[in-house]
Image (tube, rainbow, N blue to C red; front, side, top):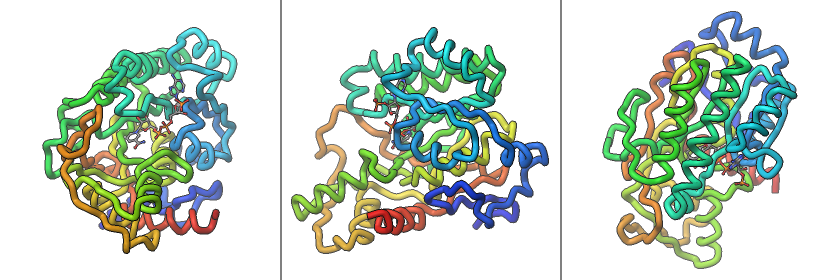
Length: 319
Ligand SMILES: NC(=O)c1ccc[n+]([C@@H]2O[C@H](COP(=O)([O-])OP(=O)(O)OC[C@H]3O[C@@H](n4cnc5c(N)ncnc54)[C@H](OP(=O)(O)O)[C@@H]3O)[C@@H](O)[C@H]2O)c1
């Protein structure tokens, strides 16, 4: 399934010690050296799902962790002052306004956070000549491609969240050459407000759930995404990447797998269509991503079912 030089991300908890099965043979010597050495890394959005996973994954480096309310990335002056003080070697943007229905209700705020925020980050990184890792979404695509979206496909968002994230991507690309734009999808993390927790809560409270069959994506373990970003961030291979656990499924199939792993197979999982589900934002129906560019430099994420099972094992150990 993976090429000889491919790094298959398998560490769901992303321990600080490098797992032995990682191979760096595909990376230039300088990148390998950089991965091992200690960097000053500035993470904005550090309290979110991805920010928390990155904090854990990158803990051998010197981290500066920022989030609301202490630092608002839409405040250009405050951001610039922070970067001046910290003088980081690299900046990772894990911050965003991720409530897609909230974005539909307040598109101005969505643009401000997801468009202007990355603009400020790109300008600050350009000023200090440091690489920027910026995280984006599958919702920049319209969701009409059954084969899944490639990194070079045309952006055509269908909702305000997607439009605001496209604005962020454009700003980063236009303003700073040393960028890694990493699109991902359907993130889940321990303690996060995400699909897994919603399914488990409804299943336990109501004994039955109703889930859509016509929304397709890639469930992605945030620890795997953090591990992939860790590999990418020192390669110098700037560009756009799709980092998702491999394979795709419908929301209904994802829910079925969650119920199975939680020993809740007795819970009725009724199939419905998105049209039966009233919400402010319309997600792209066929919104899966294909990882071509990351795989070409040897970074691929394991299948979503394996990553999900690992997540449940880790949660069971923690509880
Ligand atoms: N979650 C998904 O399923 C998913 C799917 C595809 C792509 N993505 C992308 O992946 C990235 C990480 O997502 P996530 O799920 O980790 O997000 P998350 O859990 O919602 O975390 C985002 C963090 O950013 C903070 N934040 C919001 N506005 C900010 C601002 N103006 N300045 C500084 N910090 C701010 C949030 O603070 P508050 O909580 O106080 O607002 C929160 O701590 C985002 O770029 C997102 O668009 C996520």
